[in-house]
Length: 107
Image 1 (cartoon, helix red, strand yellow):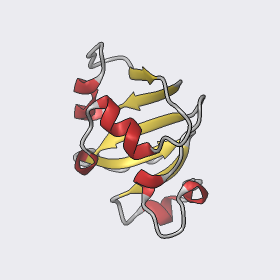
Image 2 (image 1 turned 30 degrees about the vertical axis):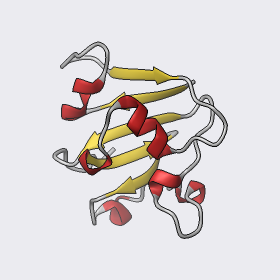
Image 3 (image 1 turned 135 degrees about the vertical axis):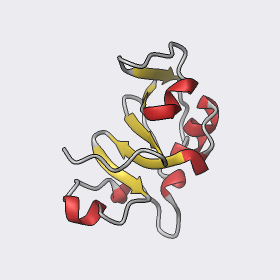
Image 4 (image 1 turned 45 degrees about the vertical axis):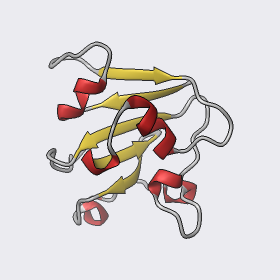
């Protein structure tokens, strides 16, 4: 099982659409599944994704400021020559998915 925590307008993909609380999708996953597989299962087009965190570490962003914000990175999950969509996921992983229209958060 993997959890997708959806933010901004990506919350529309969650079974319970809320504006105040968390919008979470829990999906069963099999061996060899990737971030790309999980996004497709949830009905999320990767072109909508601005930032994605894997277990609290930044996996991918479209924000050039990410380096300066010193987020911990999950880049080690991305296979050589691949993209964040090719990163394998495992049972118990958590993905935080932010839309392109949502600015990078400073935490």
